Length: 119
Image (cartoon, rainbow, N blue to C red; front, side):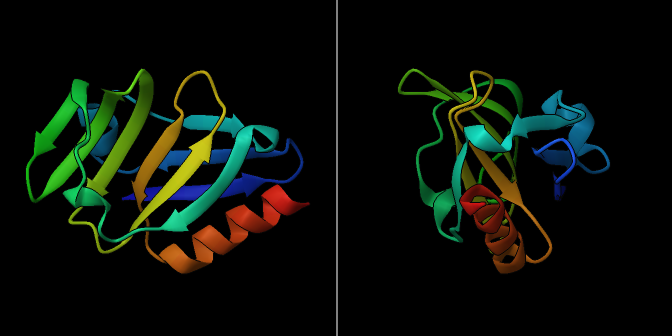
């Protein structure tokens, strides 16, 4: 699971993996300037998609994906368990072009990200 927030003062999207996901994914925190965020969607079926090549991270098919995946010349960060609460955040950041995340309230998180992008 992840904690996703918007720092309005610094105009930054902040993603904080929780628990052992920090260790498995080799990421403690991701910060993306809001002007590099293109938008977010709730996509519970995303776990069925081909993810690319994992490096580094943990992948347990049908259960858990956490870490960096490379696909079509892009780097993506995955931290998804199951898939029902999965959101996708598209960015123009050089670090990760997409963030696939499990969050507690996906619709509310997506709405807050898209509202921050629209401002």
